[in-house]
Amino acid sequence: MLGNRLKELRINNGLKQSDLLKKFNLSSARYSQYENNKRVPDYELLIKFADFYSVSIDYLLGRTNVIKPEKIDENDLLAKLNTADSETKASVEQFLNYLLYEKERKHKEKNDNNTKKNTDNEIAI
Image (tube, rainbow, N blue to C red; front, side, top):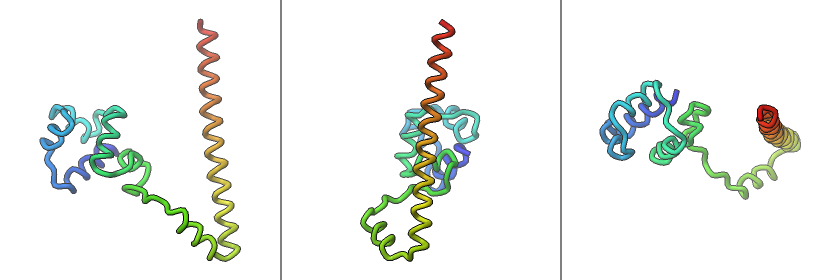
């Protein structure tokens, strides 16, 4: 997916591979491997690609089709919520609670995995 997105962005921006080779100090073979999904750039280069094209990393990785999420205007969001009917407000509250639950669950899962790794390392020593 990443390679497809890189190629699509390059072409849509009217760029040649050679333009990117200079910009990111890459060899032709290396960049070609990125576009052909044979190699994955490191995190630092992935961030540079995202910044260069003004897209999110999630978009590059195919996790979303939203090229770059817009900044949320909290006042606008609150104004929309204030004018919504009670059923819509309840739905928004349920969805927000779900998102917060998932965030906490993922955080706990990450911490549990780190604790397990640390314990496994201590046993191995």
